[in-house]
Image (cartoon, rainbow, N blue to C red; front, side, top):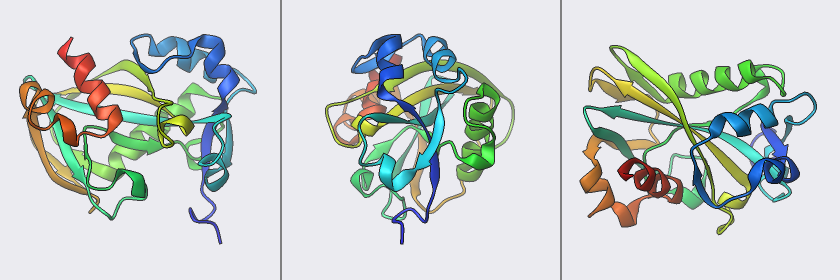
Amino acid sequence: MSKYDGEQVLVVPRAAFEAVGAFNGVRMNPQDYLAAFMKPGVAHYMDRELAEESPQFKQIIAYAIFCYQGKVLAYSRTSKGGEARLHDKMSLGIGGHINPVDGLADNVETYLAGVEREIREEISFSGEAKQELYAVINDDTNEVGSVHFGVVHRFELDSPDVKPLEKKLASMEFRTLDELAGPLYERLETWSAICVDALKQ
């Protein structure tokens, strides 16, 4: 029996990532990476259990951060979450994998549908949200990062009314950048620390 119940996730060959420009950290040209990945025949679905052990592929992860009046939404990951390597870490990212339910693999609309679905599954919020395709994240220095590639979406909210819909999201509240870059920084998962560094700049 598959560890992930046979889940299929969207991946791209590492070669496609390297063709646009391999890096560790953050890049502020996400459009270039999405355009390259969503060309016909590049992105495809793959069994997640296999993908988690295959650094020659990158799983595309939608990573949405939510801001309100200069503060950033943060939460703690509980043991209810699927990725054991991230338990008890603090995160800014809402989102996750893109799956076949979202549509055809090599299609930007599919990716965007996956972003929307992941957000709807994890949180609810009231008011208006202004979205910006903000950055891309890569971190090949650890085993989680080596098989994932993050596409960061930044949402600016006009209300702080945000509620978690999943038990894996605990202690959710808006934090100042000074808090996140200071006393809380050591608790942040790697991608969230990278996002804080980018936001500080």
